[in-house]
Image (cartoon, rainbow, N blue to C red):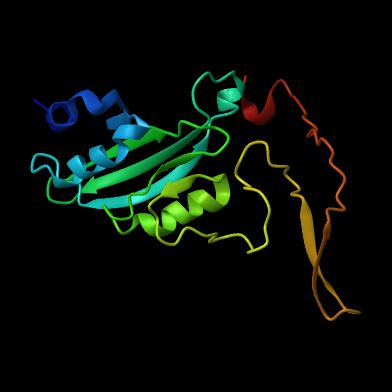
Amino acid sequence: MTRLETLQQALETVLGSRLKTLLVSRGEITLTVAAADYLEAALALRDDPALRFEQLIDLCGVDYSEYRDEPWDGSRFCVVSHLLSVSQNWRVRLKVFCTDDEVPAIASLNEVWSSANWFEREAFDLYGIIFDGHLDLRRILTDYGFIGHPFRKDFPTSGHVEMRYDPEKKRVIYQPVTIEPRDITPRIIREDNYGGLK
């Protein structure tokens, strides 16, 4: 039995019915659990002696609203965590979808892995995902007065406001965006024998 098969078997045994899907692709395992089972599954992944995922090495949000430019029939927002077991020398990806697309919320993993703190703040700032139980959930990358969540696929590329220094007022001011939206299509030159290729 390979290490990946050993890990897969351990995950199926430990998580049991909490496991919605388990996908093995390109030598990696991706787990999906329901939002209601998220915190419990995370604790099992960390604490079970067969798994021992001691470290959360990354956590991010994903907006599936225009996934691969095709209609998406599932929940819009997903939280993806990458876990590492130093003692077992294996990794796993944990996915959970928020149940409400209007106000996406999910349990915080900050009490399970302290490294989740700033990652969850980033996902809140950029996607608007609320992490229930996070003790300091506030913006981390955008300005305090920033409106909206810039990594959502419906957020305009140019944004809503721009800031500039006003020499008369001697301070930074905010104003509506002055950039007019436009589509830029690159000029493509096709040659039959470009670079010696046929």
